[in-house]
Length: 245
Image 1 (cartoon, helix red, strand yellow):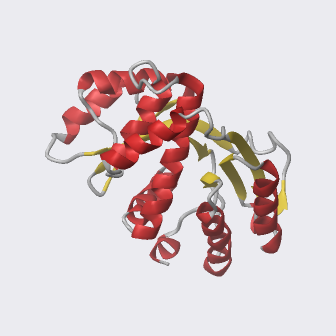
Image 2 (image 1 turned 180 degrees about the vertical axis):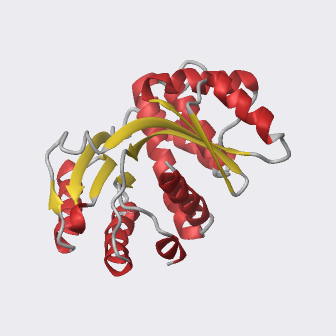
Image 3 (image 1 turned 90 degrees about the vertical axis):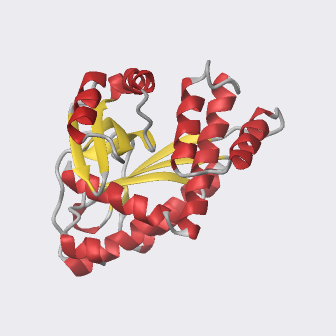
């Protein structure tokens, strides 16, 4: 999973930029909207909302912005958002899985198809990438001044199957079915994740030469920048050269 962990590191660095920070806030606000529409505005009784709030705190969303998002989502006149997924292939058979939240299905389909087709990719059918990605719970925890070994033991006790360390962070993975349980165990242990979510982890990765890899990253960046897109996953190997680019 180390390649995926590198991508998580990139996302943390990108999130520090104002433009990306705004996009991150937008994604979390959408998560809050869906959570409130599904289970109400009480985080104690709504695990999905509690998770969205924790993620909002992890990216330093102002309390006023967070509360405003919850209040707006509680308004009956606020449009509900629909979850959509797209399974695609870029050049060199690189698989791309796209998760969206939208209030306009036609717009989202048109935008995603346009980006994929423009760069020579192809749209797949639902389920066509099931064998390429596994859905896992992913928790990113800043080590800070805590003892790394003790923190790792606490994560294992909470249900982590694999733990990676990089640049002052521990990234813990668990089975999708254990996500809610691990989230609760970490809360009980007083371990606050900067980000916790279900992600699609590639079972294997594809190596692509740098010039072509940069073109594929162009597709991924365009998708990520779209307001309807919540997450983009791929199985392209993130080489050191590509990371530097």
